[in-house]
Length: 122
Image (cartoon, rainbow, N blue to C red):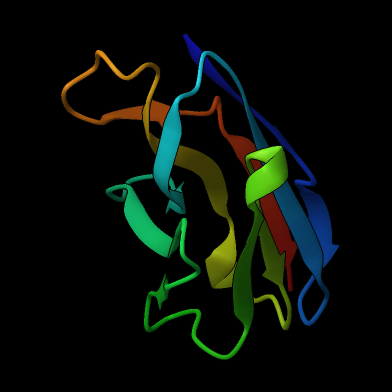
């Protein structure tokens, strides 16, 4: 089992900053990519940012210029630095790892964290 432990969520005023962390642990052979998703009430879960093991990144248009994803491969940890937060960023944020737990696993699987609440007040 691959476990993802998140931290850093909370309540912040508009314009403020938060830094989310997600550490993967357990049986891990390789991690192809890690990503952050979010889901607001009444909305579908959406991809916010992603990063490959080689450092390539992707950002949703709504967060470009404000959020930065980074990773520490040695620690199997991904971070999401969120600046200039807006009330529209309020959501439950989920960490995802695309990983193989052993060499015998032919294909990568998606592993999800439990989610952490980010609330931005106006």
